[in-house]
Image 1 (cartoon, rainbow, N blue to C red):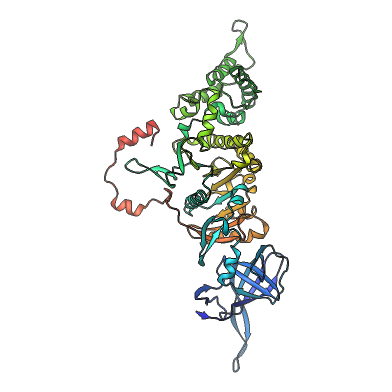
Image 2: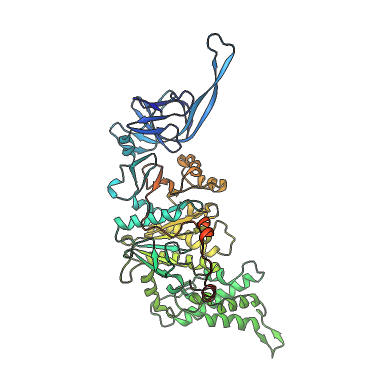
Length: 556
């Protein structure tokens, strides 16, 4: 380990539009560990910040690549020919400028030239980079290379400009989500957060049946998506099409046209007495699903002239009717098709109060549990919740004082990249939030382990990215195309991140940062199953009858 009084470790040797190349002047061809202010620093570590100095210019840059290059040196006295050697080379990404008074500004106005010195940063200089939002108190983690320096974000920008939390399975996404929400509620007690929990990771039951949660009891409300009862009559025409009609069916266009006609008629018929309301095909008012089914059935069986002439729609709805009957007879869909509480238009206000956290006692986080909802209907219900959150604040005259955050776990499952999917309607609903939600105080946070499969429109609207470990080349390339050009070079760092480490980029940070999340307390139910321990000393027997009963009743 080298002990150095000066902090100059390299000099710039090559400069282009977005990258700087520096050649080490320490280490005798390698990348040494040096001591700076009593701490050991590995020169060339990916993600570390360096300071480029030249006259009055001080440019902050981050290491995005380090390598050794071979060079030939002249032989020493008594030798012949040339002898090979190595030199350390770093590629740097410039991020901003640091004034002599210690103020950091993003973007580089005064560019250094070849020969400029590259210095390791002192602790006071590193702290100056993260001083901007420290007064807001929203501290999510710390720098791995300098743990005493905390990373603080601007929560207003983080949630208002939309957030993407991306990382492969096992990288720590659930811990990141939990830490983000726990610390948000800690400094903002009037928060309104809706968390879509697809796998029961944030609220669950232990072996004794006691409810456990990743949040303190006084800040969250747990709602089973089935008990919340988001009824069929709140679905828009497009969502009903997604749910009931197979778009690949050659009769799909006829089914869609007839559904549009009947749906509008039934909504108007059931709400004639609703004062001051202009009923459209998507107005959230009650209508009878039985009557909708009978309308299709009558049209499908219609004959005239004493049964001699078939009606124009005779036989057009065979598959539609079979599919609809199958859904009606499946108890898993009762929460959607056979609501017990939401059986009239005037129950909508109670539903909205429930899921935005206004029901007494008020809670900042509403965890909507989808773990018992059938897989094929989860996208529709998820998008429905998103649309209700958007519509709530769209029509809320105090929306600017009542912002809502919608946190979408496993977002790629119901906000897909491909347009021609079964859930095109639900995808459009979420994209509307991404494009217009900021105007009405609706923030969107999408969490995904497969960013390549997630809607490009949604990701393109995200102003903040918290990226955990991502090793898939397609996912990395996809993310690289979405982040600002100046930060695209940092994407390659994601493959080397440890669990709980993230590369954060966007408007809510003063500088793109590699940091480690603080451990959430309590933690979510997202730990990997210990196969080794379970297979060595697991249970000898199970209550299989209990498993069968839970399966049949669809109750965990």
